[in-house]
Image (cartoon, rainbow over all chains, first blue to last red; front, top):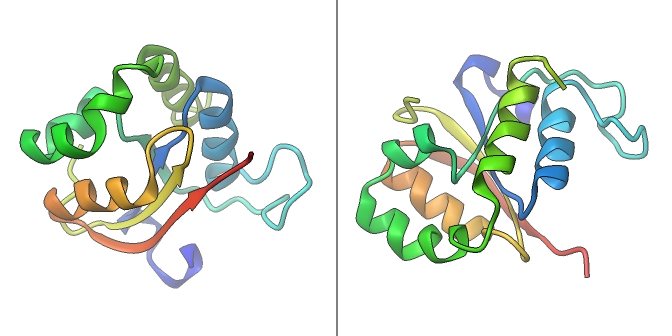
Length: 94
Length: 42
C-alpha cells in the first residue's frame, strides 16, 4: 500500500492507546518492524507518522468532528507521553 | 500539520482510537483515506 504512492503524500495516523504501542507502530512504518517479527522487518518505508491526539493534528481537524470521534477517548489516554514517543520516532530520536 | 490532499493510512486500535474515527477525522481535514483498520490484541 505505502509503495503505491509517493511517500511524501502519505501520512500514517495512529490511534494507539499508549506510548509503547505508539512507538512500535511509528518505528514500524518509518524504519521497519523493530521486533523483526512481522512482514515489515527490515523495510524502511520512511512514512510520516502522527498520533491523532497530537496538537498539530488536532488543530487540522474541525473541532466538532474531533470532539465527536476522539475527544472522549483522548481524556483517558496519556496524550503527552504518546505525542513524545511519536515525535521522537519522527525526529529520529528513537 | 497540513492533511489536505494527503493519502492517509489510519491505524486504529480497539483499546485506543478506532480506525473509523481516525478516518472520519482525516476526511474532514481534507485527506483521502487509502487504508483504514482497527487492531485488537485481546
